[in-house]
Length: 329
Image (tube, rainbow, N blue to C red; front, side, top):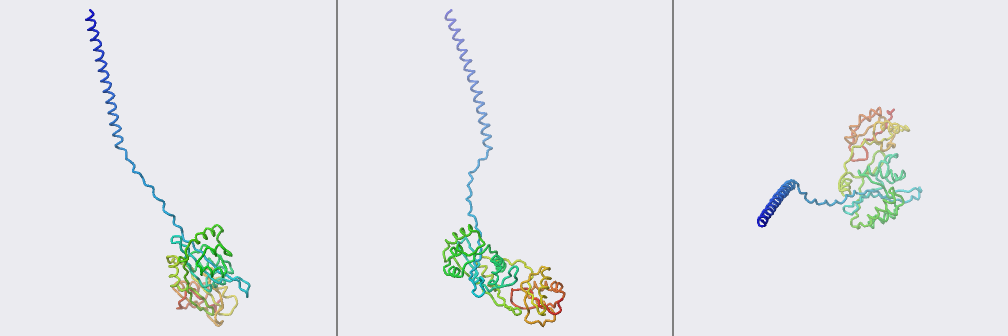
């Protein structure tokens, strides 16, 4: 019995072991299958993911600093009149890109259109204030000047001789710039070598209209100087027809009446003066260029009289000269 029981027990234990082994194998198979399926799924998903390439950060480009433009006015006291008069004028362009300055020296006798005063020499236009002078010179040279520095004639001479701009502007008598701007600009200009500071003269020519002598920049020289100073030639914008009115009848106030009529039509009155004589019986409208010819009929209609005459004279002071005659009403 014992052997049979023992044999039975062995069979029973062997059967249990076998069952256990089968269960373990089946369980392992299930686990393996699940893990394998999961790996395939993960692999499939990961294969659809696009790998991002490392992005190189763009280096920031240096900011472009615009040119700075300003007017330096040399002045001194006139002992005869007691007024301050302009002795020198310099339009300066500071170019940070090349760390240099180029200046345009302008003859103080050059005529410009002063707001509220008409056509006058720069030397006389200072009476209306430097702000008006800056505006008038900007219009003439065809690029905007940001502001001005007024210095003495002695300081101006030293500036030209030493080619140093920082000291005179920091010690200027008057300026349109704020103190913070002056200090910043002065520090920048201090580091400019003298060989990178250049001044160019703007030649002028004499124009006689009636009994009045005008000085204007030579057109070709102005363009060449602008190219050297700015590196470009500013485009000349369409401007209203410019007119000088001369009283040729001798009747007081007639030129002013004519000017008022024309201003209302959009014309720009540069100057009002007496003609070379008062013997003009008829009003003459002298046309100097194509723009003037286009305006001739409108001018004659506004005045109520006037004979249109084409004039050939190399000048850029004015487009039209009107000589008021006795027929003007």
